[in-house]
Length: 411
Length: 224
Image 1 (cartoon, rainbow over the protein chains, first blue to last red):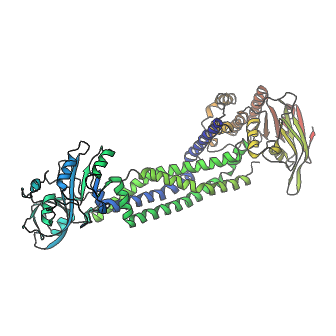
Image 2 (tube, rainbow over the protein chains, first blue to last red; image 1 turned 60 degrees about the horizontal axis):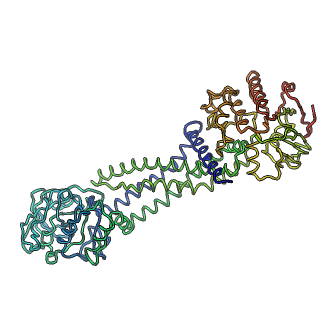
Image 3 (cartoon, chains in turn yellow, blue; image 1 turned 135 degrees about the vertical axis):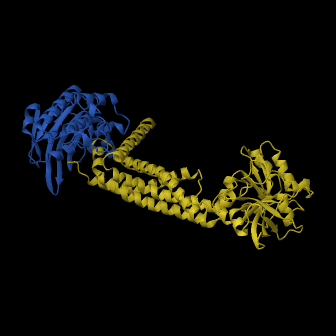
């Protein structure tokens, strides 16, 4: 067959499959056909909900830094989360961040130091906080897991490296930290390790931005002040550099990688994947959900559409009578299955949106946080899984179609 | 429609034999249909008319014997080639219409050409006009009367301009008025398009309207 007529044949077959499916969905045995669509949509939607919850659990603390496009970390810390402390650190970080911020292709850069800190709250009891130190910048209050917007820009205590500037002592607590310390705005928090008896004053309590964060008692302070408290001021040490560079190029990434000999640069997407892999439980959840949805989806469409295919034997016998070859009739079964799967995939996206909304509503009500995150790549992934379910079902449906057509009688 | 030689039969069956359950339903049936010819095959119920219709329509391979559609020996063709031959040279009209319920009237009639992109839309529209179903083209079969369904089936049989149209009891499900109307239109279009017409029926009222008549008895065709 010439390429032109082969193309015309396929175009014609797709056209016939589309009008037949449309007819099935709108006239005649509508209920059965819609059942097939739902049979694909439900497992795919469940997969998407489980995956978005898994991603939320795996990446919440780190990727909650909404304004950050790149994380520059020492090689050994490449995929560390906010909760990883006491590892290899960069030195001279204020100067490095200032150098990066001066670049045209970098909007903002700040070192970030995290340290587990024993503090004394207003009631005199000792509690542990995860202290996060950054250089605050106007418009970049979302670079930390808990918003630092209540810290005014700049880091005056650093004073060009002399660490003798004005001590602001401003601290923003997460809701969990405020609850743990029983401290509100205006309360004094005293680090137990501070040699200079420096204290902090709570200037705000910030709600969690994403899944996972609310469970941690987090405190955000200015970098130099945290360095002074924990003894990291000698080398101006920090765990990582946070960089906002929305229009970054390969040259930008090269400049970031050149900041330190052992620097590892991770973009938001790379970090998300690494975190998902590192967090084995959510990954296992997502993988199990994928296998289950493929299995149940294939079984459901095999059963429901299998009945439909078997019941349509006379229709295919009519197609045979008007000159549609066996190969074309088989192609029609395959095309109709894939179209159904595609429709089921799109319906799954709608169900997923509703399911994620419900999961977040329950999580907010019960745990005061949200668990499911929206990742754009899940949209094509959901449709792709639905199509894969369709493809896996096709051989069985062709077998059913072949058997039932042979038995059909037009007389 | 293929370029048929005016003297050469468009359909030729020789010594067709079909066995079912150890019984010969057709037993040496022979027939030759010339271009534009009208042929009536009559027979009692159970005489094997529908089996003969299916064999002539390339829907059922005979147990023995030969069938030629134009120059093509049906037995020598693959399933795909037979389907193509059926699509391009043989139109079929069934007693019970056999329209696909989830396709509209137009989509049903376009089926032989629609799936390979060869349908002639203008010709199909003309057929719908001529068969008085133009205003019903978007209706699904469930919304059509018996007469309308059969007229859509006639349009489907003629849409690819076949050399021969086979009709199995085409008026069997219709009231007399609708039956007359369908037959009139079928004859009219058959004459205009130089298509041969083979009707299999037990209806005695059709006898006078055909040039050649056969009777199927004991599995054989005899001139009536």
